[in-house]
Image 1: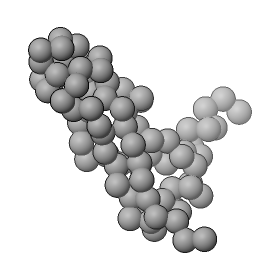
Image 2: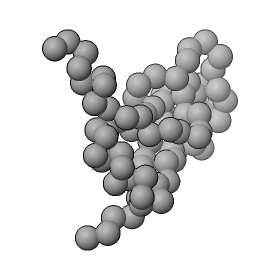
Image 3: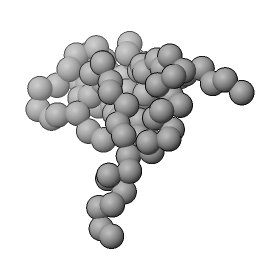
Image 4: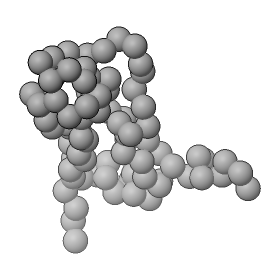
Length: 83
């Protein structure tokens, strides 16, 4: 069924803005005001994975804030996992 995958995915809520950064190397820490955040700034997962991640004290962050990497900064999600 078209669109069914959308009902099976939870979105990890982010608390930082990582897009759209200036593409000018001299302004690597300046935000552009022309575009909204995009899907590449999110970590997507199904409901089962989301439940596991929530229990693992998730930390969502970005790196390369002081380096010009284009209009997106790489994102990272870290969490603890009991095995």
